[in-house]
Image (cartoon, rainbow, N blue to C red):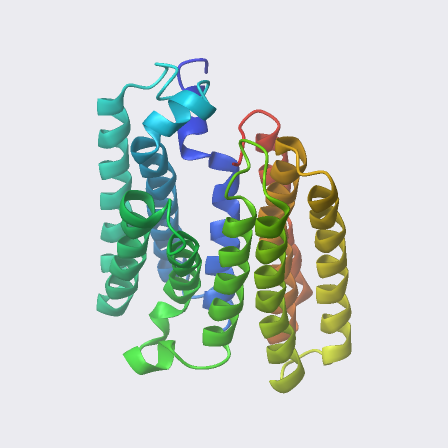
Length: 297
């Protein structure tokens, strides 16, 4: 386990379940449930490979910066060699793209777009203000990857799944801005900008629930979304008032956890099936338990 742990840290394994939740949402919004099971399993394998590859290449391209700000990360600490990290990233990419191809051409196209955003963020634009946009693009296409088994290409880019993908994508743009200097003292103006953008993403989800017919009365769903938003903003503004790395990192972690809850609430809204929503929300359990040993950010 001691030899495996640095690789799990490199992949930030606890955050993987947030990608699963996004994929669940994309699939449920275009199907009656998580069926057919073969496509569901392949899409989960695809999102797993691509998400974990993104985490690995994040550290590969950030290794010099991490050597200064986070010397305990697996690559700068020497626990994982650069060569092994690159090989792992390539294998994970191959698994993700291969699984998407097995679902169909549409899924492969979406997976390729997700991969392009992944490298655009990690390699080219991470330190610019375009970086958060490409990170949001990764989440946007991850939800559409779940929806990609619907059949016709044009059907993927329609309401309601398109609005869900846009809302979650904008939320992540804001969270990425918020996390921009999480390893050191953050600027209050940057934190506030991130909070405003993330709340714009939540507003998109609220608009969808308010304007799109679904299986559950919108009032219940709006209460759920409102409670999540209230908890998040309370924690985020604590970081604004005291912008220490610890407070900001807690705010980022809570934002990532909330993705699972957002997806669970939206899945219940679309399907009216409490079992599907609870199964999605249950992804918080491995996220939380693994997060005790393996940092998510």
